[in-house]
Length: 394
Image 1: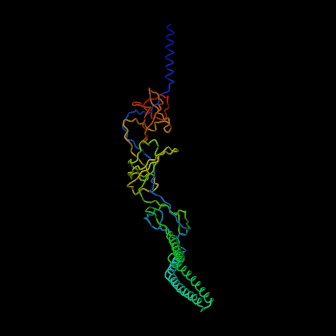
Image 2 (image 1 turned 90 degrees about the vertical axis):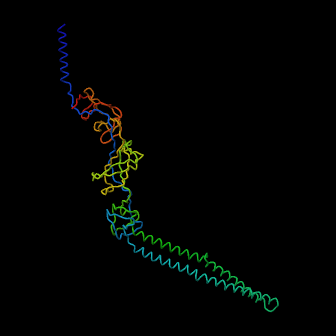
Image 3 (image 1 turned 90 degrees about the horizontal axis):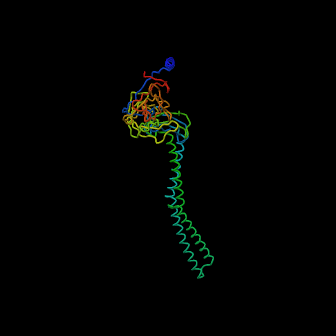
C-alpha cells in the first residue's frame, strides 16, 4: 500500500514538472489600468482653403484678342480691364448705324415740317376747288332751266364737281397719312426706332470687346494670349473673388456629436504651422458621404493671415465638450477599430482575454469606451499579444 502511495506521488510530481517545463512562458506586455478622468474632446481634421467665389471669365462675342492686361496672381479691382478685343469692324458698323439714325431722324423731321404742311395746303386748295365746282354746277343748273345754256354745259360742270370731290377726298387722305398718327409718320418713326436699336446693339457689341473684372479679386489662371480667337463659352481666365475666406474639411461621421454650428476652431496652414488663426464653424452638412463615412464641415475666417492662398491645405481643430469621468483608450490598442465590432485585449489572472467594446467619441488618437471595460481593468497595449496568451506586466 505504501509503495502505491509513493508511486502516485512520484507520478504527480513528474506530471507537474512536465507541465511547468512545457507551459508557455508569460509574455511581458505594456498595461494601462483603466481610470476614469475628465477629458476635453476636440475634432482634428485636414481641410483646404476655399475661395468665396471662383469664376471663369470669357468673351460674349467672337473676336481676336488685341491685348491681355493681367497675369496670374494680379490683384484686381471691380471693372478693371482684363482683355481687349479688336474693334475696327464694329466701329465701322457703329458709324453706319449712326448714319442710319441720322437719315431716319431727317425723315421724321421732313414728315413733320414739310410733308404735313404741304398736305394741309393741298386740303385747302382742294376745298377751294370743290367750292368753286359746286357754285359752277349750281349756276349751270339754274341757267339750263331758263334755257340760257345747253344740257352739255350742265354735264361738264357736274363732271368738274365730281373731280373736285375726288381731289378733296385724296387731299384728306394725304393729310391723314402725313399727320401725327398717319401711316407716313408712323413709318418714319418706326424706321428711326429701328435705326436707333441697331445703333444700340452695335454699341453694346463694341462694349463687349472690353472684358472687365466682375468684382475685386485675384487672377488664378490665364489661358489666353494676344492674337487668339475667342468665342462665347471659351474660358480666358479664372478669378478668385474677394470675400470672407472659408475652410472646408471632411470629418469622420463619428465626430458628429462634437460638432455644432457656431463652434470656435483653431486652424493653421500646413505650410506655415506656426501661423495659427481662429475660424468659426458656419456649416455642418446634414448628409453623410456614404462612400467615405464623412461629413462636410465649413468654417469662416474673419481675419485670415496673409499667407493663406486658395486651395491651400490646412489643419483644423474644433474643441468639443468636456467629458466627465470618461474611460479613454488609445486608438492603437483597439483591434478592428474601423469595423462594427471592435475589441480589446485585457489581462486577467495572467492571461490575455478578448473583450468586445462599444466606442464613443474619438479624439486625438483616443476613443471613449462606452461599454465593455470598467475601472481597474488592465488594458494590454502590446499589439503582438493574442487572446489566450500568458502575460505579465513589463
